[in-house]
Image (cartoon, rainbow, N blue to C red; front, side, top):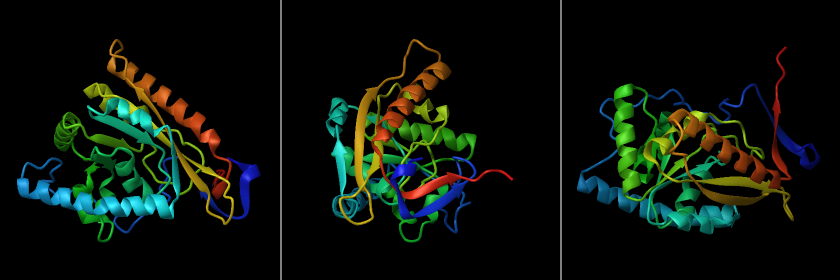
Length: 263
């Protein structure tokens, strides 16, 4: 996508479709166990979850600041909704960073990140991801009701719901991939504000790893005068256009993504 900025020795990854899994695990097809809970009333569980979350905050700070060296632009816009829950949409380009960085960006709010069931199969980390705020996508209509109920409760508590509408992580991808309108049915349903965070990659002053800058924009609101599907489409179009425009700040490819032509 950025041919003039491609490193001579950059890795090339070929893809057939934008929804292709680039990063996979042995438990890619993992399904949720029976009786899985998205919201816990048990005070012991909630207290332990708070401790686990607090333990990972310093790790997130160290990783984002000193490993990825992330610079943020316009993050202050999140303060416009400091007293209410909101959705935060972003492009999915960092396998580890995308799990922890939003917790710093949205602080002091707790984050709840929508994630695929396969994440529960990640060695060691997978089992504690729900305590860190992972909202695992259900695979049945009955479970979807519980999922939505939990999401509504978290929003009422002022939490930040993180959504990666591209769904699949493409490491160091310098462009925003097309994503579905259905990713915006939640803010339309709950009448909640939205923000977007666009991760961009620029040529480093030294070394090979790109400089990372994350841009924040919003808030965006669903139009309550439109029918749900129409409001969902408009919200999608506004945020997709904003993220695509911000992605133009990328001028460097650490990994080159190239579509494989059908033979």
